[in-house]
Amino acid sequence: MAGTGGASQGASTTSGAGVTTGTTGSGGQEPTGATTGSGGAGTGTSSSTTATSSSSSGGGGSPDPGFQPCPETGACKILPLGDSITFGLGFDGGYRVELFHLAQQDDHEITFTGTQQMNGPAMVDGAPFPRNHEGISGETIEQIANRVPSPALRDMPHIVLLHAGTNDMARSANGANTRLAALLDELIAEAPDALIVVSSIIPLPFAAASVDTFNATIPGLVEERASAGAHIIFADQFTGFPTSELGDQVHPNQAGYARMAGVWYEAIEGYLR
View 1 (cartoon, helix red, strand yellow):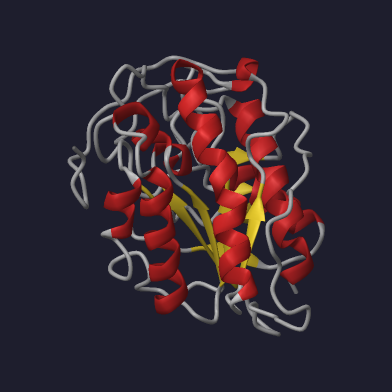
View 2 (cartoon, one colour):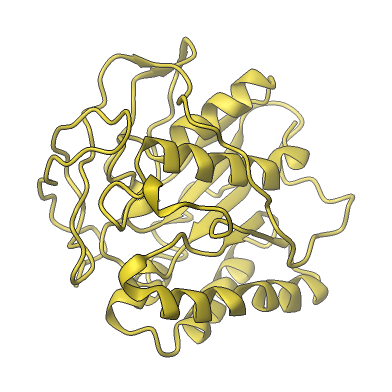
């Protein structure tokens, strides 16, 4: 099981579409039965990914329309929270690269927070890319929860992007929805002024039935908490995600990460300054 910081280990060099292969520290072990994708080297500059990055953000509750988590001036701080898919195995910087591009092209100032090993390109669209995140390979929902509030919320974010549960599907899917509920309650309690965006998990072909069962519970968990006044919304990362965009049947390739970025951006764009 991956520890809180995880020992840095090299990832194998398999490639998805448009991925620069290489090795990078992964911060923990991968799911049982999964093949680790590469975390390509973060070199030089990067423009946007070439894949289409559009999808529906889905429903599941929305905060008070007057709620504004981002500051009037300065960057809106976004915490990418999760496991290796948040880390970006398979494409260096993961969905964060295209998400930053999308915000930049619409003149929204964002940055990423987090305490884990930085990765991603040095530049995107001619601007320094914020390489921070809080994704640790191999971590389950419970292990992610153990990082809340510390160290995950050490630099308090304005927006949290949570994609969690893939490793639970690979190890022990039973009770994953209960564990996710506890994590959501922890985030709401510790970051009451942040917008928490909770997504369904992307496909995991070798545990497809478990993923379907788990994903079906997430909108209800979000709606229940939104109805109680929490600043929480749902983003659908599963619907329309083709398995052809999984570089190793677990982690997205470059096109898959661009698709994820589009879903995240659709969910949060209305809250950005």
